[in-house]
Amino acid sequence: AERNRGRSTFLRPRPPARDMAAVAAMTARIAHRSAAGIPRGGTTGRRARISARKPPRRPLAPPIAADSDGGFGAGVATAPDGNRTDALDAHVPIDRFYTGLRQLHASPDVFVVDDFVTPEQCDSIVAAASTRAMDQSPVVYAGWTNDVGDVINTAARGPALWLAALVTIAAASAEGPGLGAGAAGTAAYAGAVALASAVAVANVKKKESALKALRTSTSCALDGASDGERAYVAAAEALMPGSDCARFEAPTVIRYRPGQRLAPHFDANRGADVEDANRGGQTLATLLLYLNDVDAGAGGVTRFGRLNLEATPRRGQCLVFFPAAEDGTFDDRVEHEGTEATEEKWICRIWRHEREVPPPFGLPVGYRPR
Image (tube, rainbow, N blue to C red):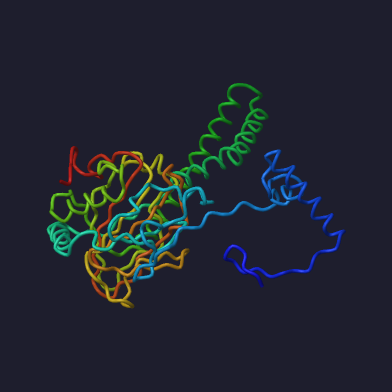
């Protein structure tokens, strides 16, 4: 080895003449490219075609931070909207950095917020409900207008038309064609449609009676007056930016005693445009505030059967999910139930609707929580 400008190099054998010629040719090409301003390794020729076939480098996904309870951090609760594939996931916006927010499920999104209100505020809500009559929780057969409409449309387009035609033909044969035959056919048609309507309504009443046996809890609606209710409504507004409390149903307290339950159901309504027109339209978000602790394994959990997900009540904790997309589209993925309680359970519910909810379903006109 010899020293060359302070660096060690190794003497190599002199290459054959043909190799020297190849080196000279390569040197000439490099000089030509340099003179023409073409950088080495440029994007021309075969190298460029190979580069063009390489897939673009994907950006690194943001890390998902798991909290101590296994939920995902609020800041990365769900994939960005551009990666979503289900339009139903476009729900009412929430503050994903809200203190205590954790995600239990994605697509559909289900969240829980720890310490949504204080224990003292929970007690305040229970005290307010205890001064009111707690009646059996109401049960309404949601979507009855769709069912009745389907029966009437089927009858009007089929059996009623056939009956009207037969009566018209019979009347024309007996009395001759004329207004009398037409009137008889029209009357038969109207009678058949009316009969179908009566049968459909009776079926709705029968289903409502059956549903009452599946909801055995008691409940009452509040007016937002107590300190606990005000804190709850204010927290709900803060969690859902742009959701004014005028679009909230008044807080409803529900009490489950041992042995009571609520069968699987939906909070949204396929017939909301008609059936819920006087209470703000479709239900877009549900906030369930747990007012007392329930021992794990003691029953009384909130179960999402289609998601294989359960939430055990913890005092001051709020469960948040979205019965419909922001445009009002019904989401059947969030069917849920309150399993049979083995000890007393208290919850308070707020529904956020599409439009303002007038009294008596909503909060008092001009109400502000703070």
